[in-house]
Length: 459
Ligand SMILES: *Cc1c(COP(=O)(O)O)cnc(C)c1O
Image (cartoon, protein in one colour):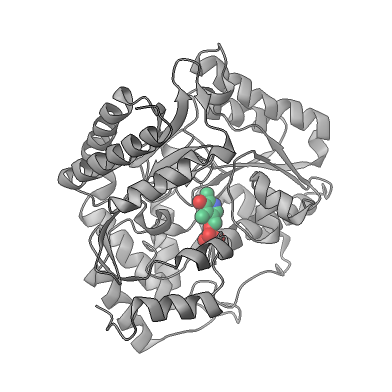
């Protein structure tokens, strides 16, 4: 536990004075004061006021094996003692970089055998943009540059990654997207499906990709990028028909398939990757977050042989890389994290035991609640759609702030539950969560829904 050297008020004052927060209204935060998280254990975080809070979001979707894992702390410490840093630019490598790449190759879908390291999901997606454009130019098709993503897609917050994603407020802040990024609709049946069945809608949503490729010209389209399940966009799990049709269209027009596995990767959906759950055969994949359970920052791009070989055979240098690509300590933590996931059979447990229990327990809450239109998600990712009226699928307007209100009520009940996408509340807890924790989470979430519904006069 960190020694408490200042009072909450002192921390809040200094935070207000000097610390600018990501994705935060700093004026509103200054008015209320930041919550100072001082320590954590298992699936609970603790604040400087002594509140014990159930972390229903695993930090930011990343703390897969829970807080306070001695194996990860020891792995980082040991690596820092023997070699705290060395780069991989100068025809050199470090043992943990090599070992981790080897381990990843055993887990990723067939053919994805090469790994380029970055330090965040955003950087990894920027890497993908550069590698894919380079790949197409090596094949004599330099005009194949455009990436097609989706509305409510999230691929990170750098200049390129925010253009690649489909978050309207992020685009609005910059006024203009970078050139050569385009978007199709997110495959959310509840809000866009109308009278179609989920399966019919899945095909319709996927075929927007074909229309977009034809509009732009296949000779100009480099790749399609999508999260197997959209996370920050509101836990949108696509209909079963969606990904196979996307895959077919991409192959038909010679467009690469990029799976952004930053949230889905390493067990979240009950398989090692969302690509396994949704039968995606990615040409490239983005990995981060749960890769190290968030203990140290690390990310990777998984590259299929057929892409890597073109770059490899061309013989030229790639002009790309980061000082901390494959930081030895971060790699050591990632290896220890994979060891835990394997040894404790955590991914299997998500698929066969705790995932189904989580889903059925939350489904019971959702089915009975006037505020909840649908429960979405996969594995240990759940998304509650907040609605004014279930019968007409009437979702709250953004200015009604239903999700923000619900987040506050959840917090008052010592539960971290996060608004995401369009008036949706997401739960994505550590993968080591127990049935008792799930019961506690469901109970606290229900109370937050009750209080939110009451505040709108719906209960
Ligand atoms: C979080 C996230 C990213 C960005 O990762 P950072 O490490 O925050 O840069 C990219 N893609 C997806 C799907 C994410 O959820």
